[in-house]
Every structure is written in C-alpha cells, then in structure tokens.
Length: 300
Image 1 (cartoon, one colour):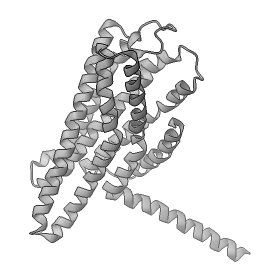
Image 2: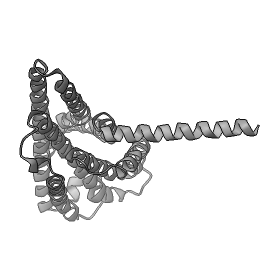
Image 3: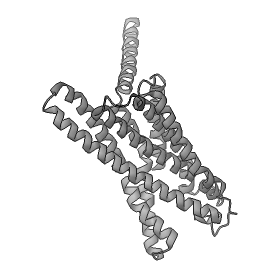
Image 4: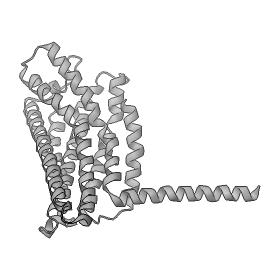
C-alpha cells in the first residue's frame, strides 16, 4: 500500500512542484502551500524505507536506521504539514473576516519569517531524537525504537510526543474555529452584500477542503496514538490491549501518509493560480496533440 502512495505522491507532488515553480510568491497563502509541498516530498522520501521494512527485505539491523532517521523525518514533516494547514486556515480567516487588518500580517516577508520559524522549531524538536537514538541494536531491542534511545532520549521523545499532540489539538481547534467564524461572517454578509459574499463563499469552500483533509488523515491517527502513547510509556495496559492499540495506530498512520496525495487536492481547489497553470498545461498538451494529428493527416 505504501508503494501505491509513494508512486502517486511522486507523480502528484512532482507536478505540484513544477506548477508552483512557475507561480510567484504573490500571497502568503501560496507561500504556505509551497512549504506543504516541500514537507510532503520529504515525507514521501521515507516511504521506500517503510516498504523495505514491511516486506522484510532488509537485514535485521535495518530497523535501527529507520528508528534513527526515517521515522524522525516522517513524523517531523507530518507535523510540519499540520502546522502549515493551521496557518492556512488563519490566513483564510484574516482575508475574509478582517481584510483591513494589520498589513504586516499579510506581507510576504512576515510569511517567510513565520515559515522559517516553523521549520527551525520542527528541526529543533527532531535533531535530539536523531542524536539520542544511539543504543546498540540487538535482536531483542531492534523491534522497539524506544529501546534504542538513551535515558535522556526517552525523556526527549516523550516530551516531543506530548508537544506534537498539543500542536495537533491546537491546530484542530484553530481549524474548527476559523471555519465556524468564516461561515457565520459569510451568512451575515450575504444578507447585505450578495456580490462580495460570493467571493467569500469560495474562501469558505476552500477551508472546508482543508478541514475535510485534516479530519480524514490526521484525526483517526491521533485518536489511536494518544491512548497508545500512554499505554506504551506508562505500561497501564496488558500486552494484548497494547497490541490492539499498536495495530490501530499503524492502520491510521497509513491514513496520515495518504495526506501527501490529498494535499494536491487542496492546491487545486484553493489556489486559483495553481488550477489555472494546470489547465494551461493540459490545454497546451491537447493543442500540440491536435496539431500533430493534423500534420499526420496532411502527410497521409
């Protein structure tokens, strides 16, 4: 299954990179989307290692490499995407509800600084997990990444899990709050200004897409991840219940991985420049194919 996601992600996000490469950073919204593309591509690079692990093609000590590098890269970029989805919802809220607010909030410079801060914070949380996963791998501890960490590494890992879970909850609240606020504002303004409300309705539909992708990909995983984390760290459940939570976590983790294929849907529905460039490219292809067919008919 991860092979299918990997191939689809390379195709979809490769196309997204090509399109965004030809789109200038005119708005903060476009710049946030470009950051999500980068996070999705970095997350996609971890899938081949996951495929090797699941198919048991690698040597037994291959899991130590996964625990130290691949898993950290996967989760770092997953939560980076979550944070940028939250920033996009705030951006949509400000553009619709408070379009005449502080101009610095809408500037590209502010957006670049904020985006850089996100990457720096996520790297700060990830690097100690790389460094402190330094235990000697044996056949007894290789199947559990937590056993490969030093005592300080276990404490840091626990702290990062709580921080990431907190970030998810905050973004979830922000998404729901922004969606409700935009919906209420559009409902009130539609009674007074029909022309302007139609444009704002599009913003509401776009954030609806973000909420749908967020709930589909990330909510099921965290509903399983939170009880699994507590049972794993505190040993409050027996082994059979812990295994059930583990399998639920792995299945819902697959949904989180599917986010790399669903994010291009956000680009298409929310970014007018993206959809225009995509249609322009498809129209150029159809025109070139029709010209070739006409030339072949004339030659015959």
